[in-house]
Image 1: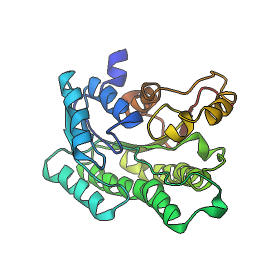
Image 2 (image 1 turned 90 degrees about the horizontal axis):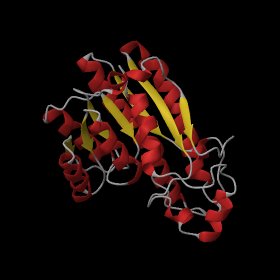
Image 3 (image 1 turned 135 degrees about the vertical axis):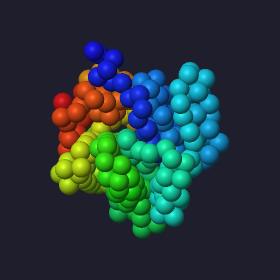
Image 4 (image 1 turned 30 degrees about the vertical axis):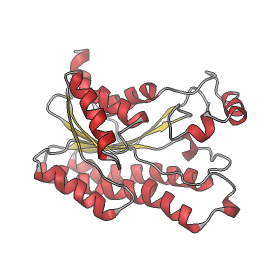
Length: 255
């Protein structure tokens, strides 16, 4: 019974930003539960490395490169999904950008626009395209958005990044209400500090890291593999009555 709750056999999941970190950990975990995982990120060779590792474990995976900040690239991504006959049951919006760390007063518009293009427009456009495929197939589906605890508590030096993450939570709720009649569930996961290359500006700076760890009751950063199970849960039959919700995985930071 427990296995059936998390069984994704026969499902296809597209994960953006899946060449490393939380995305790669989630790709491995979903594949272990039977899903065909489409690994996507900007660099095809990096995607193929993750795919090779999943296949070595006995899983099923494919690689499609895409830049979530570029509309043409996203169009090509979803066209390839259709052309290859993959279908789509699960979308995990995970790719993110944070090109600037510092005071908002000194932030250039180029950095602002890049952050918004990937973190907000990219999530919106991918969700829109995936939902259209799911609607056409009439099998329902699931869209998951990886946001951040910054959605609830803006971080110093990350004001615009935090704002886009807050917008993702609102976007999740809006899509959840509109897509529910199509049996498409939409939820968000809000990770806390996680030991990834993306967060290296924080985790590799001893002074900043110590300040952050003092605010986390568990006293450490998460590993990507500790965020992935929440995404598996929300993508699985176990979460069949959950939509429009946001789940914090932060070691107690927001408590």
